[in-house]
Image (cartoon, rainbow, N blue to C red):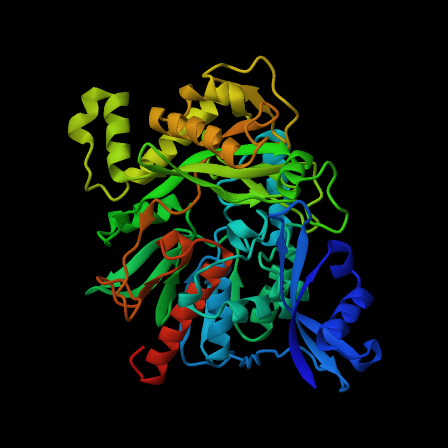
Length: 535
């Protein structure tokens, strides 16, 4: 007999297979010997009371052989001789999962990636962290696997309407991720493990007849009569295909500029901008688990916070328990911070983006205050206005830090009090931090909304609002500040046939899983057209 059973267990019980089997037996009213095994459907932590509990939903097998978890069958084709070819611009999650889906559909994917493979990319990240030198083509945002490869690998999403979350997670497992991501409420792979998984995906795509070309940058579109015929790469060669999936990520500013230069329709898109807030992980554990010392069977605690402040949304973004703040700039002279965690989340600090919603009117007001003489040059209709605003704040942050990607920083309570910190606590950000009045970096409304937000968050999480926390600027790459429009049904650009904007960079996703699902969705549309001979 099989039975799906919900259990509420102490953390130590949930970590012990024998204890779980005993609880299954008690729930099913059978002897322990009758329980032949189980697998987990869902796992979550309930820390609302003083005692934290682990909630498990298990598939239990009683007096019958144990079966494996049901798996999706993936049937990939060898596309060496495929008649249809699709160029995919970008080897992030949207691009890679589009490529894998095209293999299933018998279409040859040709992935071009401006950055390097994951192994070569590590050297550029080391130079950025240790020497303050950024490679504009190979950094935390650009390169094999995209921004997610070296910035955490969180797999949580609510975007089930875009496709099958389970398909994406099972594909990750197929290429080396641990099975636990299939049942955890907030699955996470970890920056230390993602490169091996991405490498396995690449090798499989190539072995199946697909192509992946690194250090191959899109430099122009070849359009005839509003039909995309080919793309130019590295200013020197032309690639032809039946369709082009544009999956360049949220930081490819040159692509947005290239689209505008070619009179291809783009739009300004609201995004969020702010800072990284870092606390000692032990402090967050004590707040969330209501304990002096975290139970060894509990993971490092996380949090999710949101508050309306002066009509603006202030919220946490990409929270990293046991994490590290990293320099995520893509150009010299611009300072961007992001966060990541290893798979064990065992570093001493917890950090999270704390950001404020930014709209077109905010950018207009900001630029006019900065230089009233530029009033005539500021246009709400400029599709790159929010991108320019984002860039301007990053440049201010770089200047305030003094160069070499040293980041301007302030203690949390000092920020609320509008006081430059006399000293700063230890911080995980490797290039280093410099005590700065963040009013010289952030727009006034962002600074004020954040400081009031931190105070409000301290009322929700007692102990959160503290000078033990350090605020590091600037978290600005939360999402793309530009949207590339597409038809709701065909997913093609409404103006240019055969151009398929995709993923975070096009404004249609917000994380690894949602971007991957969007890539699959585009591939499915292309597959349908190919079947009807209209591609």
